[in-house]
Image (cartoon, rainbow, N blue to C red; front, side, top):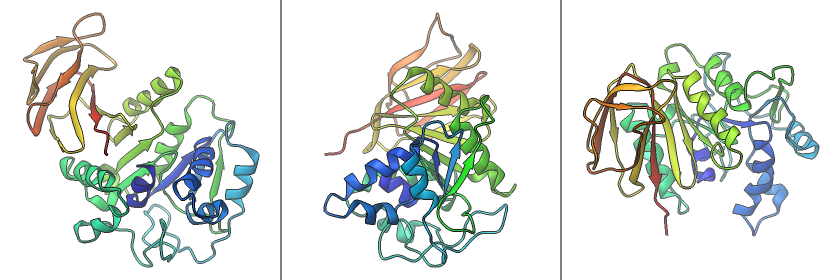
Length: 304
């Protein structure tokens, strides 16, 4: 799923120690190839964080990659060109747009779930597919003109998480007209230490105007801001049926839904009271309206 989502993404970053996972795990997807060849083909454009987790050898490897023929975007714009390669992430010499005409390329190699999920996220959120970004360990932004991965050490900032730093970087390098069209897909943000998970969920709230999806092998989580009436289009071959709606930041005095097995009708929700967990999607379109920010979570089906 990581490989497919990164191929479909227009922007790729590693959040500090996420670079270790990219370095270690990407060669495992290509067991018949030399690990060095794989790492030279699949690399992040930016590694950002306080640099307290990335291993020294990983930092050295990515910072010393030399790709002088990578075309750079203008400051404030998304990259419009990539290094030409026969396979791997950098397959287009002119544009990194991904639309319906070449979506099969993204879904190749048994990665149908990723292509379908990304296109459905774009469609259901009214997002141009070419503006999807993946933050994984990874999302992609502008390259350093010296070649290799751009290393941004923010060890001076201990008040924000590495994911927060990555999201802020993506927003800073996006034109104002495009900022509302970005969807940031974050893999590796769920599982492990609970305080890390809470910190990543807090990023959803701190960037409530940006579409951010936290993705694991089992589920996805995204924020439904109270400022909007939400329509969620379910891709039943990939996601569901189990889902949940959880108030975040403040109790909800009134939440109303349609399309769930146990719909809410002006329901009050709060921790210590009712929280809509272990619900089930009943229809392909779910509607949600609430006076509070809600976390929407839905299970992801295991693909055989």
